Image (tube, rainbow, N blue to C red; front, side, top):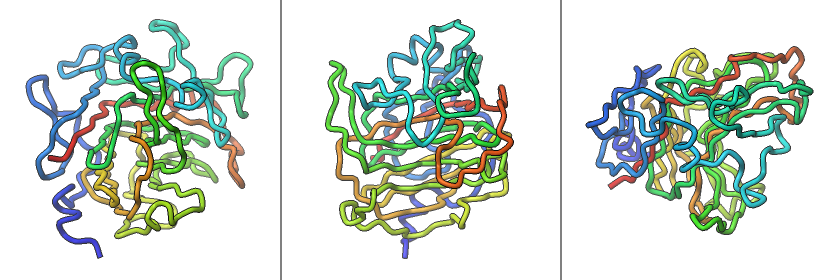
Length: 306
């Protein structure tokens, strides 16, 4: 059974719902939402063209710390076979841009381009792959509002591998992988309500410590706190306790799993995935949702627990 220390010392235990707008200001170092303990801020990506506490104001600054393709194929891979979207990057100010700054946020857009459609390769969208190396002992947190509409598949996850400043890459094994969240909006659903939180073993559980949950609030369809995650901003986090990661939503610990990471350091991915090439995926009635496909990020931050 999970100990009181394992949960309460890292997260607090109360659900705080849709968290109020980011309270950090330029002269106050942000802390994880509702977490207790001592932290050292490693990276603060707070997005917005005009806000007082912003650290990333425009696409030029974003490109200095993120990539817009997967780490594979020398950083050029722009899609995965499980979904329809291809990830694209346009110059700042281009009306086709998929990484759009408002005064107080960054939006990863998705659209059907000319000649596209509701099919694999027929939709383009934005994504983020952070260059920061993330390792066990770190706390990764994002505040975001998610896309809506049948067929959306927003994700926030850790994948192994490092892109070095000189352009070279570490080994790129897979698994491991930690999905901080995924929302499968399919099978008649048109809103992101059921959060799923996974680890990956690719059928070799023995290589990852024979993963098993120490506790979980996830039901058969995932974690359902009774809210639509596309209607307001929510805070999603992973407290990466070594070999025992903890998933946190709006300040509430919802799951802890035994999972050993035997791989290079991880990188953070925020992916606006649209369409699904999965067995039994029923997307009948899926349509272009326009701005409904927006995946809007307030901030993304990483701490080291001291």
